[in-house]
Length: 149
Ligand code: DAT
Ligand code: MG
Image (tube, rainbow, N blue to C red; front, top):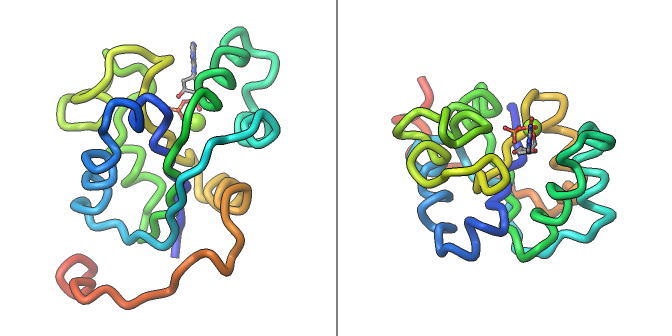
């Protein structure tokens, strides 16, 4: 089963949008298997955003993601990565479609509210940065038969 790491970024937490953002993934039909509230260290931010090291926006990105607490979650499902990316919307909120998290709630690329893994492989890697396997919960969701064919 595919897994994606989702973060409610510090702006989402500060703006009181945790419930709104979690609700989007929950209502979509993805299954929550892990969740924690933490403030990211510079070290964790560096590992999480390693692919962006050296880019002009890297310093600001690390400053932003470490500026306050985040909610880290693992959501599971068929095509979980693609489903979550579609629910998030485009990286630049002004280009994100209405109905998406970024398109409904955001204005700027540097305050785009949410992170989601961009491939199943990165999903596995990113989940392991934030969670030990024993922090993830295998559970039977009562509504599975109405969401999964
Ligand atoms: P996404 O978060 O949609 O996966 P990404 O992985 O390309 O986007 O970039 C990670 C974050 O870095 C993104 O959410 C916002 C920031 N970012 C990306 N490109 C940027 C740019 N050109 N200028 C400023 N910030 C940028
Ligand atoms: Mg990305």
